[in-house]
Image 1 (cartoon, rainbow, N blue to C red):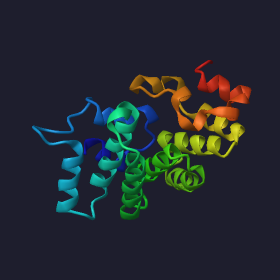
Image 2 (image 1 turned 90 degrees about the vertical axis):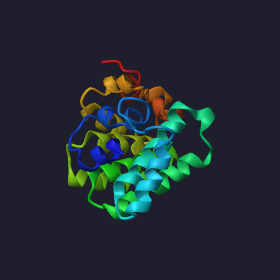
Image 3 (image 1 turned 90 degrees about the horizontal axis):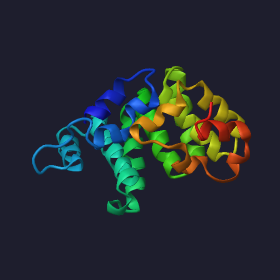
Image 4 (image 1 turned 30 degrees about the vertical axis):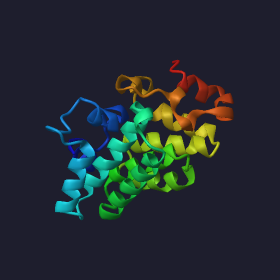
Length: 193
C-alpha cells in the first residue's frame, strides 16, 4: 500500500526508486501476521472501492510476483495486474503514477500500442517523470522504434543504475530480438557508457 500511495504522488522520481518490487519484496512492510499483500489490498478495496491506491498495490504485487517468483505466479497474474492498474487509472485519470504503472503492466503483456498513450499522458502531466519515460521507451521498443527508445532511455537519469532494485534491461521482454540490432540501443541496454 505504501508503494501505491507513493506512486500516486511521486513526481520526477528516478524509475528504479518507484518500482513495484521495492515494496513487494522487503524494502517496506507490506503485510503483517498471516495477511498477504493481496489480502490487504482486497480488504482496502472492500472498505473504499473508489480509492485507486489498493488497485495499484494489487497491480504492483502481482507484477512483482511475476518478476521475482515466476514459479509461484499464474499466467493470469499479468492480466490481473493490468486490469487492476487500468482500474486505478479510471479512478485517478490524472495520476502520473497510475498512468505509468498501467503502461508498465501493458508493456509486460507486450501491448506497446495500448501502453504508449498512457505513458504519453503521464508525461504530458509531468514531463520529468522518469518512470513514465521508461514505459514510453519500452512501448517504443515494442513498436520497433529503436531510435525513440534509445533517445528516451538516454534522457533518463542513470539508466544503468536501474539494476539497483533488480531490474535488468536484458531480461525485459520489451528489449528483446531484432530491436537490439540498433547499436545505440544495444549500448544503453547493455549498460555501456
